[in-house]
Image (cartoon, rainbow, N blue to C red):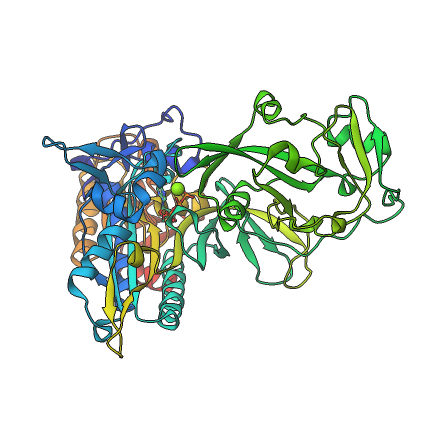
Length: 583
Ligand code: ATP
Ligand code: MG
């Protein structure tokens, strides 16, 4: 491409609200253009990179025998009502009506549609397994669209869905997709981790996320320093905690009511009794938003130095028969309205106060003794609390893993890392096929719901993810498979005929060898052109400048900005050799 004839609106100005370097560079280098909140246009450079990423994903998916299709972006609402997700998906689902008042949604994900396709055409186990994928638009009315392409409202996803006659066959495909995703992210030269994940609103059992490691990542990954264990903090677990080492001793005492005036926080409680927060029980009251649009309140008990992990708490509620969608803060007033006293909430006589509202204890407190908790009376706590004396308590893993907690697999130290979720694979089981009555006949002629898996990759999110990991302070750096141009020629002074002729000859010759080249033929200062090369981040730059008089050109590697000189004799061979060596 000739720079002068291509729409590449580079700019020195950072867009307002752009805090991430990927967002700043993608806009400043003329890759993307914002047209609405969380909605972006892809300009020529953006489209080139997008297509390159798509090519990598497509090649690896096809290799794994997945079949490429495209499904409608607009989906009849009835399908979503049948699966039960029309209500459940919440406000991220954009619902609308056509001129005849028929209801529709803009697809945020396509389990319902694909299940309808399979239901229509697949009748027998002999037609299975199948894995169908699309690379297409999604719309999610995100609460906080931000960071440019990282969290858009309209974005492109690769979503694949597989159908099986048995759980074992799903397990096989899940592993194949895991391997396929590894290849895709390796092709894109990304440093990533595969982590255990929560299954979220899509539902299902086994689920893994693919996280690109980057400090700006919105996800916290819990990783073991010793073994391979890694999990999203929403799904991470740990070994049972050990008591703090002496001299901090457990507060051994007979069960008794203690006057604790104004001791309303864990910190004050620890100071009052001179103990470690490990020995205290913290009560967290949450407002629970239910599937039915109703709301309720629940009480969660944790060790005083732990904190509630809301995703785990939500899962624990649903595992105990609730249909909860979301947890929200309960105000002091709301807490008082259900009969509780903020600062003094405890386990004793709680049922008689809050009735059958959910009460869940963190698993680390299971049957623990020597604890101190609120007495459900103003200015009072109980000491000598022994949870093993209670009957029918519900225990679940609901606390956030802390750094330096111990790995449940090997006892190693757990640490945090930040990651960008670029992919997510799920075992769905029969969640959708059952709800939508999608069945096949097995070997014995018996009707059975399809066993399903689903596999997503954030195509448009991959663009900023690559940059967050690779870009430097000057601009974009891409991998070989994602770079917009392998070679960027700068004709230093376009008024110099010799430079111009040589630059254009080089451009045409390299292009004829199927090398993607951008030739900067603009009548601009050299400084502006080199800054644009660094901003755009093509892999290499050839500077055709004054040195041409002594038959030399300069070669710059964008990754490390190392420079070399090449003789113009055999220049094509030199460049080809350089590109070969880089492989
Ligand atoms: P997140 O937790 O980041 O909202 P998610 O769990 O909702 O992601 P999935 O439903 O698993 O995402 O979608 C599959 C992939 O689509 C994600 O791994 C991510 O790469 C991408 N993705 C999801 N939401 C967005 C978005 N708003 N903008 C861009 N990409 C997205
Ligand atoms: Mg999401």
